[in-house]
Length: 469
Ligand code: ADP
Ligand code: MG
Image 1 (cartoon, rainbow, N blue to C red):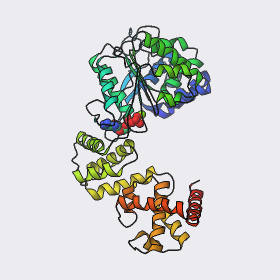
Image 2 (spheres, protein in one colour):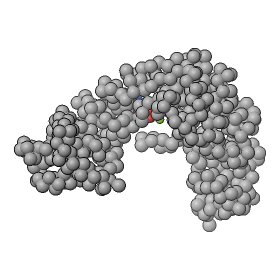
Image 3 (cartoon, rainbow, N blue to C red):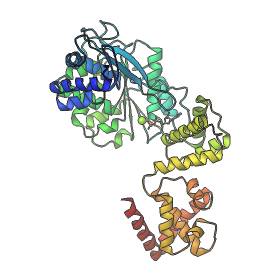
Image 4 (cartoon, rainbow, N blue to C red):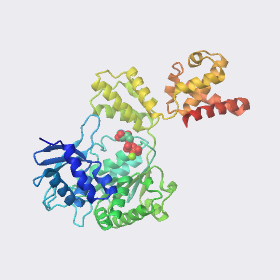
């Protein structure tokens, strides 16, 4: 009888469990997925190169023991390592490595490229954790990001040499920080293959650091980071309040900076506004260049939409692109979601991309984005409160006793949902965004001049909020 891989792997896990602590078991063994057993070979899937290296560095003996017990003395283990987790169009990319049970590491016996090693790292084999799909080519330039982009290009040409060290890019959600720093990393990696490039988000950095701390591998951890030529730390604001991690980063930063290595960081606010950081670290952040990325303007959004659709080989009519550029006013990550959904409809469902489809997709996505109350609920609550007919309120009736509740409902839609002005208008009989702006203004004006009206609006606000909590 051929045992299935889950059973075999579960047998292995029983043995592993006996030798590793619960925390380590949860961290390093739970995420593993058994893929197949062929003959004496069990293949397991691990989420990243780093993961694979970690297992090989720390658990090779226990894995060997487990596999021998579960399969027999000839039992062997192979890893399928996810190197790119893919997306809706592309399946994950994996590479296979044998388990180093003979004391040899995959990819050649001499090249030990474990992250935590004393020996020199090999730039060819270090996992930079970069996503190759982010490039300067597909990063659209606009007024909103010009300075940051130029600084990025300069750094990519001469890492560590310009005065832009560190380069600190900051801006809100979805303005392109990650895209830009990854583009810099990719450019350097491609043009200067002898440079060691490493992209980490604060989560990677913190986890690695804590693991190193727990496992008494701090020296290795530092040694690894000190060999990096370009260190990119994304979303550094999350290090706030993490004293020890900051301490370690401070040390690494100083060493790298002193030896002319490039450091790039991103954050959601400028260093002067960052809370929970040691002053000496903040002052280091300001040594080089600090540049911000702004919310993209209409033109830039339009160009981003066209670029993205072109890359997927899809024609998008100008009016649809304009509609989206105008309507998605939350952030570019939401835009990405909307575009992916459109691409999905166009390619899989073979629908033509037109305004109707765009509106439909937008409605669904925006509804997902909003986590609070729905337009329907606001409309219903407001019409009941003012005792007016719901359909009349949503419709075109111009009587004052209807118009005011309608304006109030629009006002709450703006406050409590993430709908764009245009979409709010659509939910009230297809009015355009300027009508909505006018409504918001008159509600605010009336609240200033009429205290009874103000009290009513506030009471309504409370009713709606109760529903939200
Ligand atoms: P952040 O890190 O600032 O939150 P991201 O870099 O993740 O933002 O950007 C969000 C999405 O928008 C990504 O898919 C990114 O490719 C895209 N994007 C942002 N800015 C641009 C730009 N200028 N040109 C092309 N795509 C962009
Ligand atoms: Mg980001």
